[in-house]
Length: 328
Image 1 (cartoon, one colour):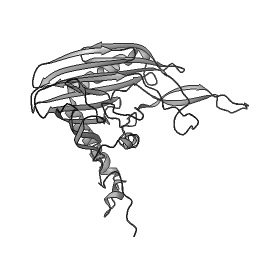
Image 2 (image 1 turned 135 degrees about the vertical axis):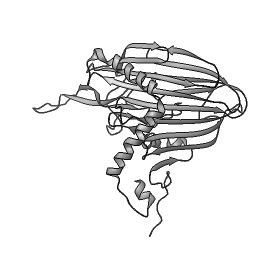
Image 3 (image 1 turned 90 degrees about the vertical axis):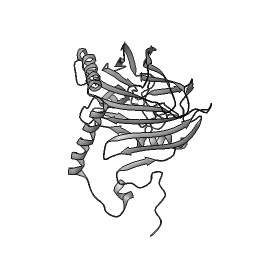
């Protein structure tokens, strides 16, 4: 028997494991490490946005359209195309350490591991990183889209200072400056919708809550994307808000001593006029993320594991003797 071709991901029955960060694998890994629940889909972009190929967030059935231009027309031809949209990005959490950005393309990666656990339904990442000035930190993140609450995505983002004091700044954002991947001359690689399809209509920031309201350019569907936060630190911290025309952020600043750890929990919700009255969207989204914050991240993590334990009990297919085939 011929040797099995080498794989970027070691064989494991339940997990897809990325054991080293490789810039040339970014585009592939964004697809491989996608998480979704049938309604929300989040591409596997890194929270800090390092070198993203296509920073994608998608909602099932949420689209825009444009007229199809034919050289010749006949009865039965479709009049309009329909394209699922890349919507506001709620995955973003940027980190600065003593004014240096946490960026895997700079500094030194001392340890790296990212895992998509299909048994538990979560994506996790562990990084030990040394900044260009020599400060070492440990970053752990967990991301998933809830199976029990279809409109909700959750992220935990924890940082530990490994050597000495440092000032940490966390910027958690909702970014409406998103576009679909253009198709160019090949319709297989993207869409024919060009430019900014989501038109900003309103924005709201109140404390640790923030939301964006958009309308699609042609179909005039309404989208509300909202986020709420919890920030847990062993010392005092400050919180501010920042906003641009199509991007809003909640910013935390904290000074940590050696071996101290801080955690940011982010709750993101999406509601559209495809499913609800436009006037109800903002209250629904706010209620979703506020209730999630009150219930807390760990409870949703338990819900996720329980849901998939029941799912795999009915649906799992076992293949003995070859972990790589079982993994597939």
